[in-house]
Amino acid sequence: ESTWGKAMINWGFLGLILIGWTSDSFAAEESYQPYIDQVKAEWEFKNPKSSHTLDLRELSDLPDSIDPYLQSEKRNLEFSSPHDPQKSQSEESYIDQLRASDPHRKEENQPEMSYSESLKAKLTVQPEGEGAIQALTEGRSELHPAEKKGSVHHAFGVRYGAALTRNMASAVEAQLRTFNEVYGGAYAPDLSLFYEFQPFHSEIFGNIGIMLLGGIGYYQGVGAFGYSILKPNGSGAFSSLSNTKFRFFTAPMVAAATYRFNLFRYLRPFVAVGPAAVVYMEKRDDGVSGNQGHSEGLYYATGVSILLDWMAPRSAWDLYTMLGVHHYYLTVEYSGLSTSTGDVHINISGLTAGFTFEF
Image 1 (tube, helix red, strand yellow):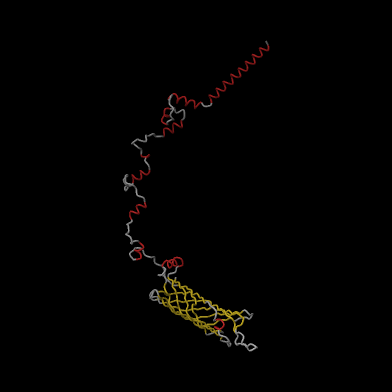
Image 2: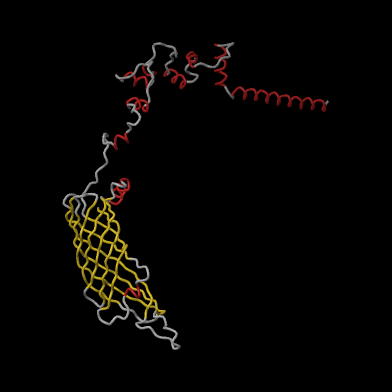
């Protein structure tokens, strides 16, 4: 009996424990979502067979205690039908308001014209051969080339000796060979640059200027003996040319007054005259030192400047916009430089050609 009794007691305790655990589980399960259960119960009560989605207007029947925030937001909403003819002013689009306030608005049925189409409608169709370019070239257009502003007071140019005659002679010692016998057979470049300041410039009366010119001349040759030496066997003479190579440099510097006559416009003759000085130096490759010094004299020139603006108007305008050049010319002149002082007398004359730019 004691064993049976103990078993009954144990089974009794186990049953009590199971009953208590089950009741606690149901109680906890019910306490998980009391608010949702309440809303669900009231919804099923009002719509027992409805399966459609919740409409905000249907929430008006719910008590405020369920969700006071939702009820307050619901009261702020204004429900209106999309097909309601009594449409409020707030629901009217911003574009409709602008169209209503514009007194020049177009009719609703009239299609709107784009900006490019409106400009195209204003343009008149030109007959063939009556374009703007042709009208400009014939002088019938309202378009005119822009004028170059400012006045001309400066000029700059480059010149190159195209055909020059040179004669240089020693004024101190007896000269066994002439300059041309030593240097005349080789090519001799002669390049010079000049700047001219024009305090007075007129397209009718011309311009007066002060010109500063500087350049360089280079000559090379082979030394020559003063006398021919006969060979011992009497079969002739040795060559009068030596193996010594000579190089001669000149650097003329000029300050001259100029006058340019501009009345002819496309052809502008000019004259220039002023003092000159020439620095010279001779070098040789046989170890003997050469000579150097300077001579002074006179410079003169006369020539013509050919206006090039009309031949290439685009290039002329580019020169003006980038460098401020008003006119540019092809210059051809005959010039001469003659010195009378110093150990070497220098005479250079002939044709030079180059370009001149006025700004």
